[in-house]
Length: 319
Image (cartoon, rainbow, N blue to C red; front, side, top):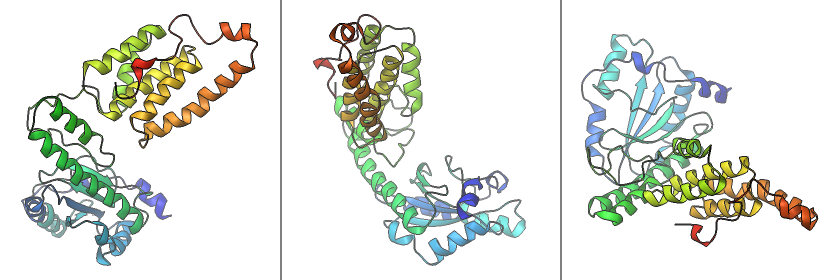
């Protein structure tokens, strides 16, 4: 029952919460540093029984504090149609500020930096089911936040390819989000232009739709060569390429090369795990099928025309 209730508690009350004057939240932001973010415990106050139960276990019994890594901790009550007293309570905590963008359910634990930018959030039934589970997610976010801040500090202290390298490494931190302007307002990062999510994969995939396998191969290599992309971005590009090859009858050898490169870029990421699984799911059956065919049939099998070979030595991971 708790899971079901948590999964449907969207932040409907936030829009109706009044935006009043600076208080505890602004004080907390002033205490934040590159090693100490702010953690907001956002909960439905005075009407949401699930939130109240979680607040009792996580906050009042201090079960979550052992995972907070010394971060500045702020409780944020979210009211539905707040009366005057509730408006004052909200004002005491949040002042003029609304919740950071990116929070879609509560109770939740939101990690923000000194500017109030959301850098990570523990939310939803699975992540917030108990203090230990939520705490482990919170620890990972805070640890990655501290590491990312170190990388961004290094990036701001250098230029050129070295700066881009630090930025790309920061963008690849798994459990924390990059700030919108890591080098300062209006300063270009030099990173590749593809979004660090499925948008980048769709962009590449759409452009390859009418290409032959050989043309797609050249396109993918040129895309990667034209910009400095993070590991995740390069894995997204390879994921789009693998889909194009599968849909157009590419060989097992080519698919194995693509998935191997995709996995080796970052074996620990979700794309790395997918690539490992894809070798077993797609490539191995193709190889077994080809091996079972007579030699004459096998020679003519495997796809549409030219460009049906493996990616070659120029396509090793990291190029």
